[in-house]
Image (cartoon, rainbow, N blue to C red; front, side):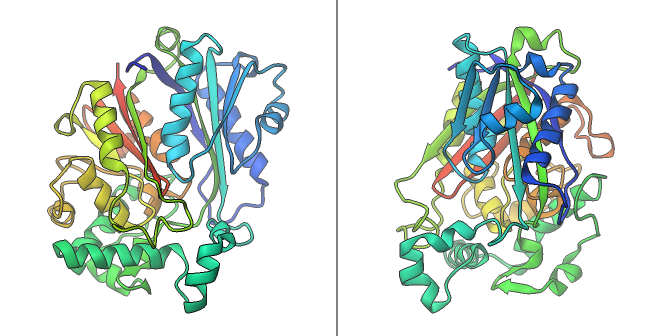
Amino acid sequence: MQGSKVAITGVAETPMVRSSPHSLLKLETDACFAAITDAGLKVRDIDGIVCNRNTHSADEIGFALGLERRPFTAVTDTVGGTAPAGQALVLAQLAIEAGLARHVLVPYAFQATRPGGPYGFHSREPLKADLEMPVGYFGQASYFAMMANRYAHEHGLTEEELAAVSITYRRWAMLNPAAQKREPLDLDAYRKSPMISTPLRVADCCLMTDAGAAYIVSAVDRARDMPHPVVTVAGVGMDTNRWPQSVVFTQKPDILDYPARQSAADAYAMAGVGAKDLDLAQIYDGFSISALLQTEMLGLCETGEGGRFYLDGHGLPGGRVPINTSGGHLAGGYLPGITLLVEGVRQLRGHRGEGQVKDARLCAVTGLGGNSHSTTILARG
């Protein structure tokens, strides 16, 4: 694969809400229709779908959209943000380069309010059920709290530094009319946020969201004749580690080791750029500590300096490298990975109004799936 051969030509998302009366399929198809319209296309122009293993099949989505034919379909097999923010782009580009499709639709929807919550599947994993749940060690907040404590032990991490991550993203959410949580957040308000699992408070945890989103991938040559400024996929990298979901958060030898450094290196190499060239980044923030770690792994600061990076204001509006300019998953809404990609496209189009990063031309987007990670470099071109 080569960089800047495909572009993201249509993006859309439904309102980010705590609880929606609509079905997962309706959320997903509403976003699809809106993305098709945003791209200036008709439903009949879509000839490829890359769906996610945790949502609806191409059969169901295609029928709901009224597609007569879909010569190319694929399913992403990674979880979390890795699939829509990285793996789906790889599959879409491969299909377009092979001549199997012209316009590939990537839909995704999420219902945090479904029975068991967004991570209920973990309770079905034997190692967790046998070894961890009996002693009360269960739930994403506890896993990532352990990471925060380990990070503090190895590198030092003050309350103010950890809080700065959430405060940074909330500042951006306040500039985003579509953000799910827009109330001001300063250090005093952060300290009043209930403790969930020390040191993580509610403000350190992603929101619970019901919503759908979608985007369309087209060849760059076609994108130049479409309505919006061209935003190309300049680079995309993916990496995994050997640990299955049943142990990846809790029992691997190094709990701070995400497969992010290699995914970032591959994406930078494909795009022919480096971390210093980025104008902004959208970093998968299931929790404040995971975003802090990925900030380091992207090369935006050195290992152990993530807390100081945020405390010094580098990710804020007007900062050196604005981060999560929609509010991210901590404040904008938790639709894993895909909304970060949508935000990156809107920034590079220059369509973000009050929250626009000036002269934005190069944006990194990350997706984390526990044992997988993706880095995508978007470029205005």
